[in-house]
Image 1 (cartoon, rainbow, N blue to C red):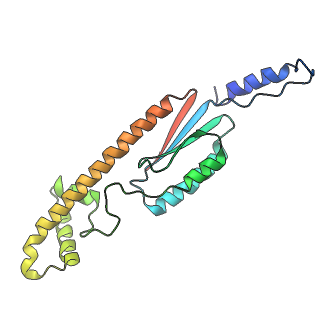
Image 2 (image 1 turned 120 degrees about the vertical axis):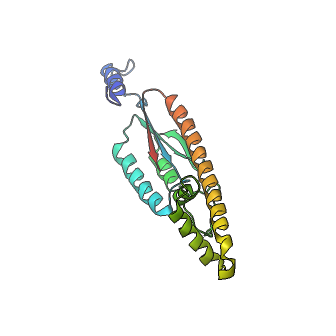
Image 3 (image 1 turned 180 degrees about the vertical axis):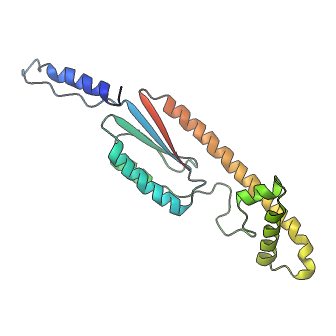
Length: 199
């Protein structure tokens, strides 16, 4: 059974019955929603360049694929943008272009040293000496540590890596909890349900 089949069958049956007052064919009822699509954007972990591309792609996808019996919703893992299920294409378009990368626990400025979550995991959990050495060089460069005080750099690098790891794990847990809520929300809808995760 394809999305919209039941609504089309009902509309055909009703339109075949003439209006009792005028005898003219009855107008079909408005289409009944039977397909719900939730678009979930992980705005916590996506950069602006990637987000702008997927935003355009999602807008084109909605225009091309959503039919009269489809309802779409837009959610974000940060909770900053939420649009419940609707068939209003303009509302969907407007909500898409409100999406922005959102940092929950990270600072918005340049960190010193600038350690990625992957590098922090390599340093703290994997004991990777190359990852630590790169972080140490970053600490020495960005803190302008003189040669006689460079023995403190490994400790500073390890502390920074631990902070980045804790922050990344917190953001990952938050994203997964939000995703669980969205799955529950979609599962309560009737008919066919889809969830599209953009991360």
